[in-house]
Each structure stands twice: as structure tokens, then as C-alpha cells.
Image (cartoon, rainbow, N blue to C red):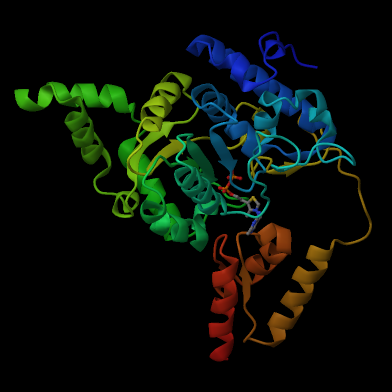
Length: 383
Ligand SMILES: Cc1ncc(C[n+]2csc(CCOP(=O)(O)OP(=O)(O)O)c2C)c(N)n1
């Protein structure tokens, strides 16, 4: 078991609201060690959780969960969140019979306001919570955390398109951009985000706002808000998110607590329009075997913490996915009209094999099943 002197004093987020930045940094490290140790026993989703350890710690410090609503997209990255929200004593029961769920679950905790497992639902759900809050005349904050992979689904855009009309109060979307889905991300949106990151290079919005203000004419110099707007405009230009009515902040380094906490606080104070905070993180962060593996240890079975070696039992039976993939290849060799479509799941469907054999006849459409089906229908309609 890892040494966790500070984490041992935190059962619920209220216990860490008074922490300073140094303590939050240490707490995050201890949560990371605890996550690795727990998953080494239970197996489960590892890489995504490790990437959001600092973000999880910062969010529960800045927001008054569970009164403030925190919704994790998919929910596969929520193990650090469970450790900090009263479930640490059961964290080594993750995904075991009678144990904790591997995803967020309403019946499990007040800190899980919305259940998930399917991707790309978080912005719609958060908007629902925001509208319900407005209807009741309350003031609690609502935050959705969504990955760049999950941002490839139409529903995320349907929700953003509706946001400014469905609420006139606070709504924060955190785009957790680790430039990974399960496989490398695909599509125009992924390229767009990469452009924002390389153009903006981890800006500290406050520092940037200040330095730009020094170069502005005097009437602007005192108007901090104007200066910051100007700074943001210079960094990113008009973004797609701005066009959709969101105030865009970022891109910021999601592992740098010193930036993360003040920027989240500042962004949380925006109450008159939805805000999108673009946070750059590294999937598998802080655990060398995860950082260096091709899929950043997205999902694992039991493993040895020191070596990272997984306890994979060797089976002589072929997997369903392998049978499917090889059989499809066999048919495709005879029938040139066969193509394959996957929704961000090449290895999970056996179509990674098909993609190696027929790269030109394989389509990864992103996490976009609805599109995949109608795209297939279009292909079929034309033979
Ligand atoms: C509708 C749907 N399709 C596919 C999946 C399988 N799936 C689970 S996590 C994931 C990748 C998510 O990527 P991202 O949102 O970037 O999160 P990350 O794991 O990188 O943190 C996929 C494709 C799913 N959960 N839901």
C-alpha cells in the first residue's frame, strides 16, 4: 500500500477545501499512487484516471461538490473522484461483485449526480442540470468534463448548440484534451484541437492577461477584463466554441496545479454565459508503464505495480473479436464491395486486423455510432 499521509486526512472534498496549492499537489500525488495500487488489484480503466488526477483534485477543491454538480463523461476516468468522495475504503472492490461500479452511478453516491458508461452524454446532462437549477431559482454550479475523443460525437455539439438558449446561468464544460481516444483520435475536430494547443501552448491566462495589459494604451490598462479578452483573442483567435456561444479559456496545462486552481476559480465566476475550459492532459500521467504503452493503459487486468506487467492468462480459445476480424478479411478478399466501419473501437471490434489488411476500405468515424449507421446506409445504398 502506498504511503498517503495527507490523503488519510481527506474522506470528503470538504476536508481539502482549505488546502493550499502545495498541499493540493501532494494530495494529487497520493491519489495517483492510490489509484495505481487499487487498479493493480482489481483491473479496470487506468490511463484516463491517471490523466485527470490533478484536475479531479482541483475541481473538488474549487467547487462545492456535491451541491455543485460534477459530471464525468463516460465515467471511466472517475476512480480518483471516487477516492476523494467517501469511497476510498471500498476502492479495492471496483468492478467486483457487490463492489463499487467502474463508472459513475447515482445510487452509489451523492457525488455521482449522473450515471454514464456510454460516451458523449455529459454536456447534454449538465445542461439539463443547469436548466433545472434555473427553474428552481437556485445558484449551484454545474460542470461537465468531456474527453477529446468523446467530443467527436454529434450529441456534444447538439448540446453546445442548445446551451445558450437552455440556460442563462452558469455552465462549465471542461474539455479534457489528452489527444487520445482508446486508439489515436480521428477527424477534423481532433486536428482543430491540436491546432489550438500548438498555437496557444499552455497559457497561464492570468499571467498572459497581465503581460498583454502592459502593452496596451492606458484606457485599456486599467480594464483588466478587456485586457484578458484581448489576450485570449490574440492567443486563439475566434474559436468554434466562441461561435457556439461559449466563453473559451485555454488551452491550459491540466497537471499544473498552480495554474489550474486560479483559472478554474476565475472561470467558475462567469455566470452569464456558458464557458469552455480547454485543459491539456497526458493520458497515463505519472506511471511510466502507462505513459509508454501505445494505448496509455486505457484498460488493464491485474498487474504488478513495479514492472507494470499484466496478469494476462493465456487462453487457447480465440477471442470473438479475432474470429470476427479474420473472417471479415476472408470475405473481403473475395468481395471487393465489403468495407468496415468502426466508431473509435478498432481493437475492441477486431477491425484493427481488417484495417491492416485493407487500410483503404476501413473507416474509423470517431465516437459517432449514429453517424456510422447512416454512413453505412449511404454506402450500402450505392452498392
Ligand atoms: C457511445 C460509445 N462508444 C464507444 C465507447 C467506448 N469508449 C469508452 S472510452 C472511449 C474513449 C474516450 O476517449 P476520450 O473521451 O478522449 O477519453 P480518454 O479515455 O482519452 O480520457 C471509447 C471509445 C463508449 N463508451 N461509448
